[in-house]
Image (cartoon, rainbow over the protein chains, first blue to last red):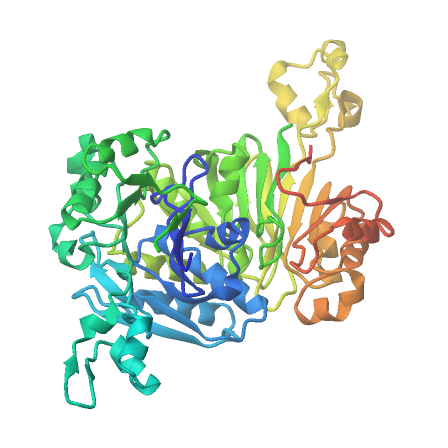
Amino acid sequence: MSFSLTILGANSAQPAYGRHPTAQIISLKNRNFLVDCGEGTQIQLSKYHIKRSKIDHIFISHLHGDHFWGLFPLLDSMMLAGRKKTLHLYAPAGIWEFKKLYRQLSGNFDYTYPIVFHELHADESRIILETDAYTVSTIILEHRMPCTGFLFQEKPADRKMIGTKIEAYQIPYTQIPGIKKGANFTLPNGTIIPNNELTLPPPAPVSYAYCSDTAYTESILPIIQNATLLYHEATYLEDMKSVAKERGHATAKEAATIAQKANVGQLIIGHFSARYHDLTPFLQEAQTIFANTALAEEGTVFEVG
Amino acid sequence: MSFSLTILGANSAQPAYGRHPTAQIISLKNRNFLVDCGEGTQIQLSKYHIKRSKIDHIFISHLHGDHFWGLFPLLDSMMLAGRKKTLHLYAPAGIWEFKKLYRQLSGNFDYTYPIVFHELHADESRIILETDAYTVSTIILEHRMPCTGFLFQEKPADRKMIGTKIEAYQIPYTQIPGIKKGANFTLPNGTIIPNNELTLPPPAPVSYAYCSDTAYTESILPIIQNATLLYHEATYLEDMKSVAKERGHATAKEAATIAQKANVGQLIIGHFSARYHDLTPFLQEAQTIFANTALAEEGTVFEVG
């Protein structure tokens, strides 16, 4: 698979029952993206045989400690392992304040590899990383502090050339890239052959939406609409709906409602409160609304596409 | 046992082979003292069934991240678990700077329990905690930055009254506490019975000395002399002695030499570099100098007295 998600941790702030705080690896086009970095993330990476050296981009959703206390130990270890490659860090400005204070207190050391800091703003959704093949955009969440989710979205691939048409219309090879991008073809006599007679549509691009931490909010529906895979936090069960709302969190039922309204392919729920040992009720509650739901269990790999 | 040491982690900065960074629990007179708090400490506490709620004192030796990145997640979890009791934190001033920045960036929350901050100074050894039964003192180490070890030392117990003497000399019970503290007894006729005829000496007080991180330095010998148990870092083997010195660390042989010169009862070595998988050579190297040496393996409990 060229696009997958590995859960490293999906507990809320207080670790419980051996469950770790939030961290995920998104593998996309042979790159590993680390999303959030709770305490112990580097140890989880090691446990699941994911190389630190293959991570060039780290995304931090917000400044609650259970989403970032594992970052600095990881950055330290990358240095100790002799890293030279540039690392891109997408995070709220406060993370860079920590880095500066740490540097100052630890004797003005600096990392031996370049870190490019990309400050995140939780005001409006924007593309923060773009290549020929995919984009990463922020999702504006509703939490007790500014908090962004992340949408990893493949770009539509080129249309597929129908091989027999090349010979039938004597299409020069130089024109094929343009036709794959949607151009028509004009015969020497001026007749225009429309693109849809020459090509087949590409497979639908796939996407992964990460939404943690957030209260129930339908404002995210437009950006996550039709996502192949959605991770939505579900800190509590529905009977604690008012506590969830007060603390800027969601219930399993609410997460499933969002999944249903956004018409996603699959829902993964996580960020479980330490008050719950058995997570089965989360799955049951969500599945009454949205059947294709899974629990974010550590070590599980979900295929996006 | 009323005085013991539990190893939670004893790897150097870069976690390796499942080994965690530095953290230890000293159990003394029904209290748990946490010494250093590397990443993952609260998860290790949970693994070894040590309750966070029983920790009222935390000591941080210095400001390298592998000795403190687990602190803030632990403080957060204590809050989330509803802690109300005062916590005493002994650490370099920089730790309190982190706490202030974290508080500010996380929305000006404050911990729901009092934290009394005791700033450590690495200039000269001093008593930082004293009760009727024990003292905790700093040990000035030699590292790349200011760094203190900690000496946990029982106070001498009272001398033991010889029961038959009470009747023989008709000693009033009101005078017994004084005699246990070393007083003589005067008979009605003025004859003085010396204390050593009335009492037996108490068992020798026991002590535990924690020395991480440090280069080889004999300046610590006076304070750790005759310690019952010594933890001394041994980041490298002797063939990397010059690297060790340059980085403010020690070798297994150097740790053993310190143990021998200080005439301690037992030596534990730790803070192993990630370059070593098999730790047997550390033990072998140290034991050529000081036979009663053990490796600081996670989960091991050492009895001090």
